[in-house]
Every structure is written in structure tokens, then in C-alpha cells.
Length: 122
Image (cartoon, rainbow, N blue to C red; front, side):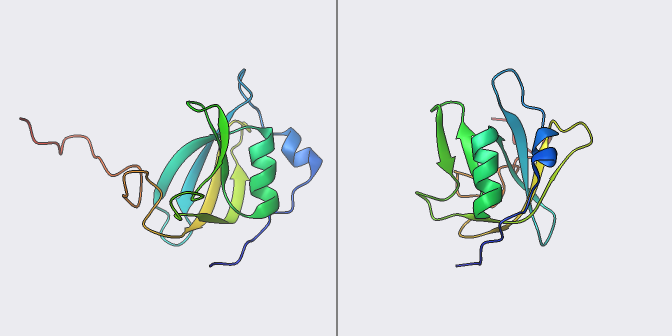
């Protein structure tokens, strides 16, 4: 199991994050070694704080209306290596070490495995 890397963050930095009307902010997850975008999910203030404190990605499921730690059931955990927010404070970026098969619930390494213009017509 990879080592956790909690991210030290100040209250001022957290205050710069802009959550939407539902209290959520998009979080992009990227492989820290090759830069590949692995997934996008949503965070609320609590899951952002948990992610930064534990060094593992924790998200908010809009469909299930519950907290989920990536990999709790699948074993495909993500270990945070870097965390940042964009210039507007309305999008987060996490560079992670991906454990297991990958980030996608389908078993793919990245959720972005489908490219436009490459699907065969029936």
C-alpha cells in the first residue's frame, strides 16, 4: 500500500474554493506520473477536508447522496500526491497515485477511454 500524503492547507486557502449552489465543486483526478486524466467527481467542503487530511480521495456522490472514499469497495484507491485549485477557485485538481485496476467503475484505467470519432457504426 502506498504511503499517504496529507496536504497541509490553511483556512485562507480553503476559503478560496467556490462551491456551487448545491455546495459542490468539481474535482479532476490526474495520474501523477504520466499526467493522464483519470476521472472527474464532486466534492463538498467535508470531502475536500477529508481528502486533504487523509491523503486519499473522498468524494460526494450526487446520485446516492452520500460520501464515498474512492476504492473502499473496489480496492482501486487513489493516493493524493498534489492538490491545487484553479484561478477562479471553482475547480480542483488532484494528482494521485492510482492503486489497482484503475479509476473507472468499468475497470478501465481512466474514465475517459472513449474518443469521439472512433465508435463503429452498427
